[in-house]
Length: 415
Image (tube, rainbow, N blue to C red; front, top):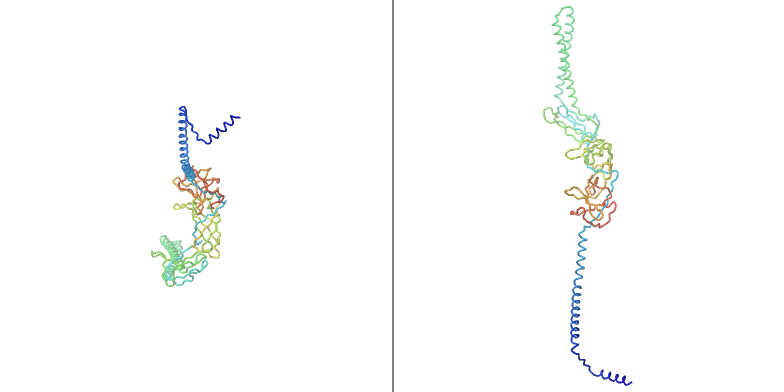
């Protein structure tokens, strides 16, 4: 009881009194160790703070660099759009320019010399075969014909006299009234007179035929497309050495010929019987049926094309020779071909190529083209139809290079 009271009294005394603790010399090393540890702790804390500050500043830069590297790697892979092959139809339409010509086209010349007496038809006139077109006055030919007829009459008179003489001498020879020599002379003169009559007759026939050319007739049914003469013009048949003068020009337009040059790649199917139709700028929306009737069966060495002829009926005459036409040929497809947009093609020294996507890599494929349709081309070899083709590929694209497809391919895309 007394002890507890004393402790409480000491506690009260300590609370009101400043306490001083003195260390003994044995406590000095402990004090030094405590101070050194404290400074080390402060240094570590300072280094940690500095490291945290540096890390806080460098970490965004590291992350930004990582993002830039990732973006650069992504941008290094070209982004491409793709298209699917379009299968061509079993028959395709080949459109080519055509030159329309008359089925029969003939200039009409004179076969005799003279002056034009009259003409009876003008340009645009529809004429029938044998119809009189013009008449020529031929005074020189008429006089030559009169002289030839007179020569024929003389030759016939001499022929008759020679015939009588030869017959008489033949009868007198039987009674030895004339010599054999005289009889032979009479027979020879008769043979010569016979030949002279024939010659004179032939000359008359020639001049009569020449005189018949005074009248100019139409050689076939057609239309007069040109008249180059007028009344009083001097007509020269060309016998004087100069070029003959064309009197009329006549064309037959019931059937028209259209000549078309078919490219070499399609020449094997451009055979007689192939159906076609024509379109004309002056008849928008109308189609005129025709049929391929013949081809040259040989390519033109300068253009590598096959010359073909298409006949078109023109009963009303509304189609005119000399017109320009677009000829649409229906060609059968013998092989499986495809259509691609023209901007998928790559033109390089290695040849014509297209870029396809296989996996995530580009593959360059050599192709062979057929017909060019303007915005599309026909591919006849090099593709099997399952490829995905890159549309508008970069010029630097290489085979095996990684690519990234920016949009999915759709069937018929790029048509």
